[in-house]
Amino acid sequence: MINQIKKYAESIYGKGQTKGGIDIDMSECKFFGYIIANNKDIENEYKDYGSPDFKKIPYTTSSFEGNINFYPENQQNPISMYLTLLASQDLLNIAKLRNKILFEMLQTSNPQNGENNDE
Image (cartoon, rainbow, N blue to C red; front, side, top):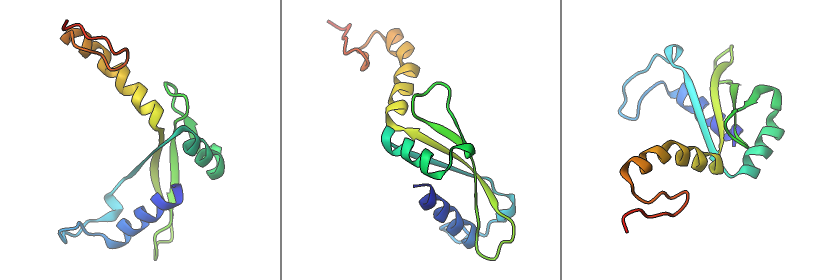
């Protein structure tokens, strides 16, 4: 997955244009990537790629973030990309925590516990 997203970044960097044909100065661009997958796939990617490049996201169980480099054609220096490896289970938990107060304020059912206060 990491190699795939690096190829996407290399392709975008190499084109230097939007889909509409507008030229972009790629030297002024910052690259960010997000990989969302299940826990096991994220942990395997973390182990396979090299754990020194990534740090665990503190409020998650299986998600990581860090900087990686990609190497576009005709470019001598590597380009940095900030990459987040986000486990889908962590994404769901983050969403539930962020929405908990809203559901309580609205006094509607909370998907986390299935309660319905409308009855």
